[in-house]
Amino acid sequence: MSEGTDKVTVLADGQPVEIEAKPFTVLFHPGEIQLEIPTHHEINGETTLARCDMLTKDEWEFLSTNERFLGLVAIVWKGTDVKVPATVDELLTKRNRAYRHVVGMIIELAECIADGRKIFLREPEAHLHPKQQMQLVDMLRAMQSADGK
Image (cartoon, one colour):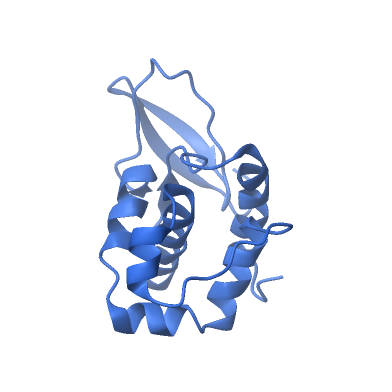
């Protein structure tokens, strides 16, 4: 096993398969195969929307003025005129699923990173336009890097 990799057991249709996982590993699989990684925290389109919907006024006031958070959001919506909502109510009632998905994803990823949990992103492109899907990879790289650039 090379440096920076771990052996991870993935359940493919309930059958254990051992893979070599690097700090950033992407698994592509046909939709008919049920994939689970029991040792990792799963983040998906449902969990991100649920996390965003749980935001309090104080949390949103902190996030909506936090330079790091704003920089990550800006990466995904680079080249658009999308503005950060002023209030949590505006976020939850006037923003589409795509925006709320990215907000929830950033929060969930940050919480996992802070807690030292390993992450399994299932269909992170859910709810996103193809342009934002491509820019999402840049956001994930920025989150992974030490300086966020």
